[in-house]
Image (cartoon, rainbow, N blue to C red; front, side, top):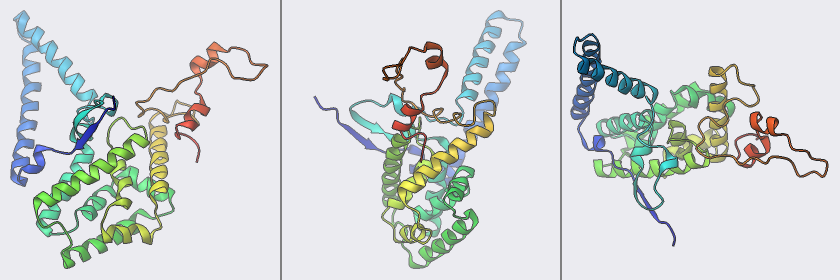
Length: 287
């Protein structure tokens, strides 16, 4: 039996007004403050059950802190069939880019894609990826701003909010495929940027055409940009290995020995070393 999945993108926040989303965000922040204040109060209570409740809330806050910036679900836990809402696999930073581009496109009648590119190009990992392609980030952002002004003049932006949400859904669906190809745990902002060269927008095609940026080259540059960023964080790891598989949700199959006729089992080496051949097959190292 063939497994079939139907992908869609539906986040209730995009159906709200700007004031509605701001209200929800304020209520969320106030709720967190109330929980923190309640936790401190319960911990210093004379009642045992209140202190126990305070310990439980501490565990809740620790878990919340550890998973900050993560999506609701990892891609590795996606069901094999049925309807799948990609909004649950989208990182908050990626959604923030779409949300801000959505608002600005509605207000200024500009290109939704160019608004998203403008937001993405200001992120550190995107800037590093552009540098790896010998593209100046400031020059790229300046040209994107020029095309953005042209899009407002020619009114090429979405006419209705429904059409705008449709474009956001198409973009997230394409970014989802980039996330799978890169073995990301969630849909990242870099996946959205990698999907931009393939969108059906005249100004976007011209923007990436001027700098001769192709989809494959862009995806590889962003992957190595992420690798370099993790090396800075994990300085104790070997420079040629650190960071390649931190975001991967796929397990690498290791052999206990090679196939040469002189081969001998090396369990300690297989246990602590990284299999570069397996990583290369998954396109996580190399060029």
